Length: 122
Image (cartoon, rainbow, N blue to C red):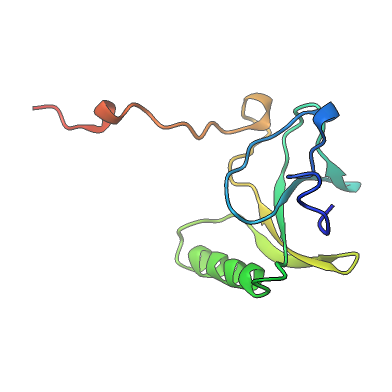
């Protein structure tokens, strides 16, 4: 899946549904369980985002992982990241911060309120 991200974007196939995850880097979504890595199907929530090393920008995954370490060290975030190799394909592996077993369907809503809700009242 990591070596052919464009064939099945995000690791999805039309028969099992699509997920949406914006960005310009190729990526797949997986769920990690006690049995290992699993493809997410039929709307099951993913637990991690994996971005393979780019042929055109080979250091991007390492740069992103280092930036996440800095963010954790300064207290900006707490989610885990690491670079892992999957059958010879290195990828930055990012724990999803918007997931919780206590949330509805395992997902923490990331919506934004209306713009005028943020204006101060006079």
